Length: 263
Image (tube, rainbow, N blue to C red):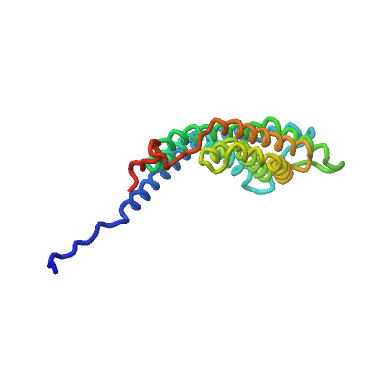
């Protein structure tokens, strides 16, 4: 038996520690970018709030305005609106930091795929928010104003109004991500075009169910959400026709080679 002492193995936690440190650095840059945008937009907080409140203000009866039932609401609600705007403005910077963190672990063809997916996701989310603001909100608020009982003053609390529109922005922004989800599923080989077509009846029913849950109980606003959802699903089917599933086992595919930087 050899008397050579057994050398301790190299620590296996070092790559994990390096990844955690890199994650912390990227998160710090995300927070810094958000903070810079927030401070830059803070002088315009009242203007931003007026812009967000315009759809409801245009539907309120004359000599009627929103109210603040909380003492600090007149200050914090414009601040929350400014923070939302700062998040949207800093979103490209945020996505870049996320991309820089995950890129070393991706295959080459995955890198080529994720860039257009991220960009299209941002664009579609903004389009969904704009669709809600310019088309859906006027219909919803006019409907609510028309069904207000006689003798009732429609004076909405500004904090509750902000919560409502934020929820609607997220709902419509997420809804408009349907083509990206469909194409991604096709690209990953989870579904194909024929399966997507066969699921069309279920998607149509699900679209109206989701619209009935999210929007107020009027038919017009439900249609304004359900119809775009169905159209976007059809767009995803059309784009998936030109999408080739990733084949990792193909030796000629660069996806079969492990990404650089993975230990």
